[in-house]
Image 1 (cartoon, rainbow, N blue to C red):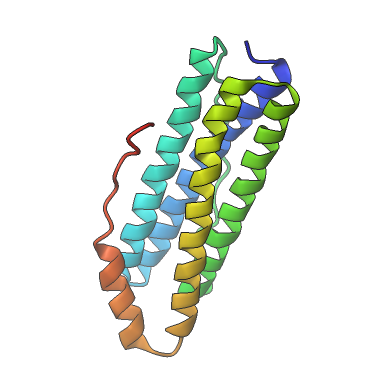
Image 2 (cartoon, rainbow, N blue to C red; image 1 turned 180 degrees about the vertical axis):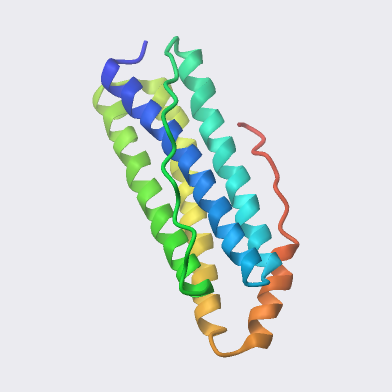
Amino acid sequence: MLSEKLLNELNEQVNFEFYSSYTYLAMAGYCESIDLSGFANFFRVQAQEELAHAMKLYDYIFQKNGVVELKQIPMPTAKYDGVIDVFQKGYEHEQLVTKKIYNLADIAHDEKEHATMSLLKWFIDEQVEEENSFNALLKKVRRSEGNPAALYLMDDELASRVYTPPTNA
C-alpha cells in the first residue's frame, strides 16, 4: 500500500505528465505556425510519449489500490522566440521532469517502497534519454542558426519521427 505522501506525489506526477503532453502540443503548434512541420511532428510525438508516461503512472496507482486525482491542467506557453527557444524550453522542461522523478524516487527509497522504486527506475532511465535527445537537438538548432538550409534539413529529419509505444508501458 502506498503512503499518503507517496500517493500524493505520484498523483502530482500524473498531472505533470499530462501537462507535459499539453506543453509539447503547444510547441508543435508553434512550429506549425512558422512552417516547420517536421519540428511540429517531433513535438507531437513527444506529446504522445508524455501521455504514455502519465498513463503508466495512472495504471500503477490503481494497481497499488490508490486513487488517481486529476487536476486542472495549466495553460502552456504557446509563444516562443524561434526554434532555438522552443528547444531550450523543452530541454529545461525535461530537466524539471528529471528533478520531479528523482524526488519521487527519494520518497520511495526512504519509505522502502520497492515496487515504486522499480517503476521509477524505468522513468529515471527514460529521463536520461529525454534530456540527451533535447540537448543534442538544441545543439543542432543552435548550429543551424542563420543557415536556413540546415534548419530545413533538420525539419525533414524530424518529420520522419514516429511514435512507438514503450513495450513495457
